[in-house]
Length: 299
Image (cartoon, rainbow, N blue to C red; front, side, top):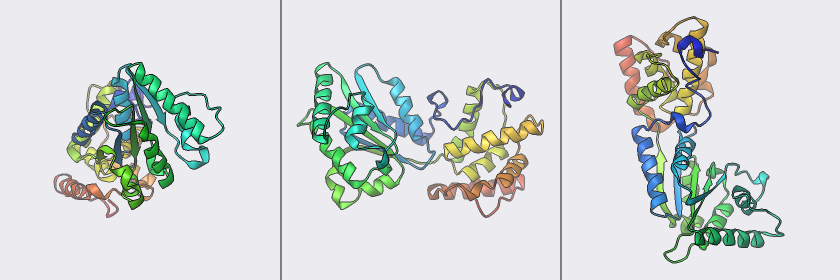
């Protein structure tokens, strides 16, 4: 509704992962490198973790766009036990007909599929999103599936994407053998203030606007409340643009952002991110010194 008012061709802060809007912060660039390394080094298991909204899925889909036809990709997005068993998920991810009476038959069919692809010069990769929801039993089942790989040959690569709780699960003693098979592991941390500013500007520019839409102090307030998490930044920026449009204000400033946050009581429904607390404190002090903006103790 506000795109024409701000000279945008589309909404710049959608909550849906979109590789076209990918901004590689310092940490996201490292994450991309680790994904590429896991792929090129034929790691049996690659594990990428990060807080809710950190940009994990966007990073993975960006990688998928760069992959050639030598890779056969299967993606599992729904990992709740109410939606079936692991081998049914796996067969569905690769569009393999599931008309088998039991898990043993399903595993045999999948193994034959992987070997057939390998004989045709193709690498099979299984990507599991929201992997923190997997039970210990299912994670152990994944390890057993990885036994398809023998000696120095890797026929099947698996990538687990999840929230930090996934690492806690993988550190359980009963999953020691699984943990030992992880070739690449990376935790995607929130962005700092410098990257947050660049991220906001990047998305505005990508959406077709050729001038600044947010003042520096507005971005400072957004950073403090979003704590450098991309999805939270998107939510606050999007609603700030709605408020600015309603007020016919061409530039989003700090008072408008604070008014929007006060109206929405945003901090009451967002989980805190402890890893960025020190950086938030620094930016709060900068806002107080440079702009006389005192943020509440909820930040």
